[in-house]
Structure formats: C-alpha cells, structure tokens
Length: 344
Length: 259
Image 1 (cartoon, chains in turn brown, yellow):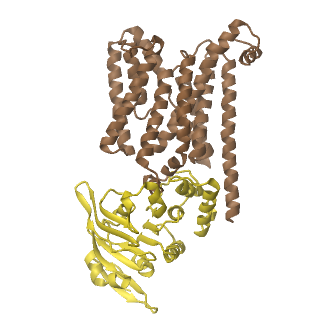
Image 2 (spheres, rainbow over the protein chains, first blue to last red):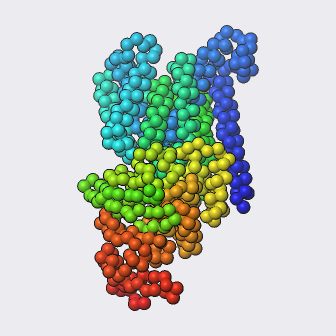
Image 3 (spheres, helix red, strand yellow):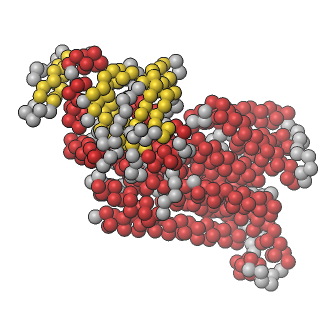
C-alpha cells in the first residue's frame, strides 16, 4: 500500500517538475514573440538572424539589440522578481492577499521618484539617467528599514507588520500628493507616467542590475523552501519542526523588499503580477515551495512577457504602459483558474 | 535526572496571569500523563510553554537538559507537538506536510524523508489520505495528519493539545493506543484531554489544573473523585466502578436524566 502511494507521490512530483519546465519554455517562447513584435515591422527572419549574430542591416541590428532585447528581457526579469516576491510575501505574512507592495515598497519608491522628478533632489554622484531609479530604490529600502525596526520593537507578527505597512503606504501616499501639489504640469505628467509602470525607458545597465539581484536572491529563496512550506501549517507547527520563524520572516522580507524595490525603481509600479502570479502557480503545482517558488517566478515572467508584447500590439502605433496591460491580460486567466478551481 | 521537569512556570497575557508559578511532578519515560481542568485553567498554555512556543518564566528540563537554552533544531528532534487544529487553508497534500515536519528543521535526504513520512502515515492508518490536500480534509482527518507530523521525528517527549477533539470513536481509540504504545517504548507523553472518561481509561496519571495552578496530581482513581471534581468544575459527579475495576465518571446536571 505505502509503496504504491509513494510511487504515485513521486509521479506527481515529476509531473510538477515537468510543469515548471513547461512554464520555462513558455516564458522563452513569449520572450521570442516579444522580440519579433514592434512598430518597426522587421521581418521575422531578419530579427532571428540579428539575434543569432548573423549578417543584417545596421538599423536592424540596433533595433533588435539596443531597443527590443533589453525591454523584452527586462519584462521577463521584472515579472519573475515580482511574482517570486509575491509568493514569499503571501507565505511569511500568512495572507493570500499579500503582494510585494503590501508593506509600502511601491508608494515609498513613488515618493522617491517624485522627489527626484519634481524637487530635483537626487543622490550626489549618480549619473542623471539613474537619478530617478536611484531615489526610488533608496526610498523603498528606507521604508523596509523603518518597517523592520518597528517590527523589532513591537515583535513582528504578520498582523503587526501588515498594519505598519498599511500606515507606511498611507504616509508615503500623502507625502506624494503633497509633492504632486507643488509640481509643475510637466513634472506631474512625467511622474504619473512613471507610476503607471512602463518599459519604455529600459536600458542594459538596468537589466543587468535586476538580473544580478535575482541571481543573488533566488538561491536563498530555494534554500528556505522547506521552512516556508512548514510555515503554511501555522507558526506553532513551523517552530515545533525547528524553524526559527522570526528569523525566516526577517530574511524573507529583506529578499522580497529588495526584489520589489529593484523592480519598481526600474520600471515603475506594476500591479497584479505579484499577486496573481503566485496564485496561478499555486493552482498549477500546489504549495510545496520547492516547486511553488520556481513556478511562481516563471509564471510571473510569462505573464509579464506576454503583457509586454500586448502593450505594443493592442493599440497599433501606441506603446501602452505595461502596468495597465498586466491587469488586462492577467485578470481573465486569473478568473478562469478560480472558476475552474471552484467547480472541481 | 531522566524525564521531564517543569518548575515555576509563569505565563502572563498582558495583566492576566494565566499560569502562576506552576510546578509539575517529575514525568518519567513510559508514562501517559493527562492534563485536565476547566476551560481557561491554563492547560494549552502550559503545553505550549513546555514546547517553548509560549514565552514564560520558569524552567523546563528534559533528561536534565534545559529546553529553553537548546537550539530550535536540536529541540525539534527531542520534542513533538500536536496543536489543537491545523490551518484548513493549505493546499499542501498530507504527505508533503509530514515530510516538511522532517525537512524544515534540518537536512535529511529526500528519499529517506519520503519513506519515513509514508511509514508513519501507514502506521496511523491514514496512508489513503497521503495525497489528499489538507484543504479538502475533515477536521478529524487533519488531526490524524497533525499527529503524524508530531511523531515523525521520533521525539522523546510528545505534547498533544486535545488530540481527540475532532476524532470519531474508532480513531480516538487508534490514537490513544498509539500514544500508549509510544509511551511503552520509553517516551514521555503529555496530552490535554477534556473527556474524563477517556482520561480515566488511558492515563497513568492525571494532572488537574485550576486557575493556573496544579490542583491535584495522581492516578485516575486518586484524582477523579466527586469532591475534587466539584471543587474544580463545580459539578455534581458520581464515580462508578465497572466490573473489571475501571472507573467511570458520570456527571449529574439540572436537566440531565438520572442514570
């Protein structure tokens, strides 16, 4: 009996691993699709030849390597970062409604951006192209530091953290309104566009930064996978299994906030991916974090990459802010999965 | 000193003192001890304090080692804890949750963890539930899975908070026989039970708690007396002896038909 059950369990695990591999392939296909769409109307063959380093016109070379590729790769990486952050956030806050921006990271980043755009206050020594991102990242990390400090003083259970996070969100939003109130029309437009989340201004150094941050955090996430899985059984259970829950929560929040801060500072506020990516992954592979975390990461990358393609094609000739599109294409998928889950 | 010692356990929630310097008698390996007492007597709090899940003053030692000063992972190898309920919202399958009980706190090769977890579920008669998500289970089924999580690390001390509360009669007997067997192999078993009939039948020793203190300690015959039950619960009780000498507790109430 138990041998058969174990065999079935291992088959199920292999099926989940296959699903993760499929998601990876789908994300790569979406990346290619993203690369071959665009207003320049390049023939598919030319795009592929440029990508593989073949002989193409100089213009094609520039469009593919300097315009489309950084944007497409950034979409993939930001989606991955936000969905992984969302998955871990939902587990450590023991709340299915949590997402990377629950604790005030995005509004603090927006405030930082506003201070740069409107008031012109930036970090000294940073090149001008980086000034807005630099400020946003700094403010987002500052919010995290404040939160960790408050959590330490009061004992950081999930409810307390969420309450502090909500308070932080409101504070940053109020200060943002204040900055907007004194802003010129020009600066205001720039700021509104920034907060919508856009891939338009992406360049290679930004892509490299997100890639490095992801590469540095993912191994720690995977190492904590069984601990996070245990936390799904409740804090008492995880602790009785030998997990240092307070430490787990602190380190996970640090990882999540760095990922979210990096994403938001590069491309602005992108909603939905960090909330729905993990839910879609959970419905596909369950909650064993050894597969759930990679599945979330890849789901986020896939959704974001598709959104990037659609942002170029939905309205011909217009590049929509990608933050709007994630919600537009994510929601139907999300609803379909919820409805299917209900029927089962 | 072999066994479990808990001395001067003091727990405060805000200004309310839930446990006030409570002492337990030394609990030896091989014994099943039941913590009984009215609601809010401090039974669950005491269990959580012993498991080091509840901040407290006082000292808990297991075979001479102070549990509070031990690293969490080392403690997890010695102590198993079964909570009153498992959260219903998790889509983890039962087997995964038992494997997590083995692998979250320390490194164990995957194949060994899988086989150990499966063997424990089989022993408890819940192998058929192994691949069911916890969210699709009844309260009683989840309680059996929770027992598997508590015993899978083969701990020397087992702490169980109302382990039978959601179980049917057959499963109650299965769980309590398992506890008796585990105690027989030299473990210390401490369970909170509300059902005094079950306590009378299965406990070696009953600790009767009242208002955050130990009110009485002894064998079921010594503790389950009309006088003590009236003091602690405020009920009129009769204690009958069945033909094989075992005692039964019958509670009379205002509207309860006489037996």
